[in-house]
Amino acid sequence: QVQLQESGPGLVKPSDTLSLTCTVSGDSITTYYWSWVRQPPGKGLEWIGYIYYSGSTNYNPSLKSRITISVDTSKNQFSLKLSSVTAADTAVYYCAREVTTLRYFDSWGQGTLVTVSS
Amino acid sequence: EVVLTQSPATLSLSPGERATLSCRASQRVSSFLSWYQQKPGQAPRLLIYDASNRASDIPARFSGSGSGTDFTLTISSLEPEDFAVYFCLLRSSWPPALTFGGGTKVEIK
Image (tube, each protein chain N blue to C red):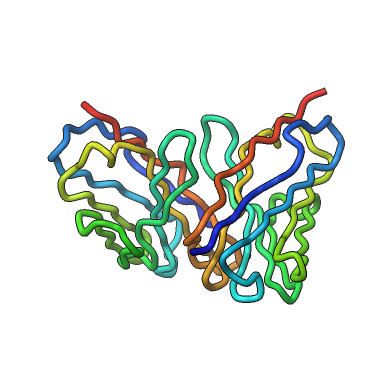
C-alpha cells in the first residue's frame, strides 16, 4: 500500500521560498501523477499542481508564477517550491497521488503545517 | 474558470438519517467529479470518483450521482463516524486544472 510523507520547514519568513518534499513508499513514483494540495487553517482545499515522473507539470493558474514542482526518481520523491510567500500561504500542505491526470486523488500524505511569519 | 458551489454549508442530522449533499458547477462539465471526506486533523479520504464510482473500501451507504452541472453525494443512513466535512473536486477542461468545492459540514443534530 502506498504511503506519502511530507517534510520541510514548519516556519517560513515572508518573501522567502517555501520548500517541501514528499517521499513516496510502497509504490514507484514512475507509475502515477503526483500532486500538492493545500488547506489554510479552518478553510477549504486548493489544488497547487502536479508532476509526472517525466518532469511534465501542470500548475494552478492562480499560483503558476510562484510554483515549481520537481521530481527525483532516484529517491522516489517529489518537491514543491513556492516563492515570495505571504501570510496567505499559511496552510497545511498535502501531497497526494493521482491515478490519471486531473482526475481524483486516491492516496494522501498526512499533511504538514507551514506558517509564514517573521 | 469553473466554480463549484457546495450546499448546504452545514447539514445538521441525527445518526440513521439520510444526508444529501449538493455540488453545483458554474458551467456544464465532465463527469470527472470526485467526493472526499475529511475529519479534523486528518487528510481527505476519497469516497467517490467519476461522479458515481465508489472508491475501494468505501461502504455502500455512500453513493454519488449527477451530470452536467449538478452532482449529489448521498449517505443513506448516517453512522457516527460519518460526521465530517465533505468536499467535491472537479477537473476543468480549460484551463486544465482541478477545483475544489467549499465543503459541506455534516454535524450531529
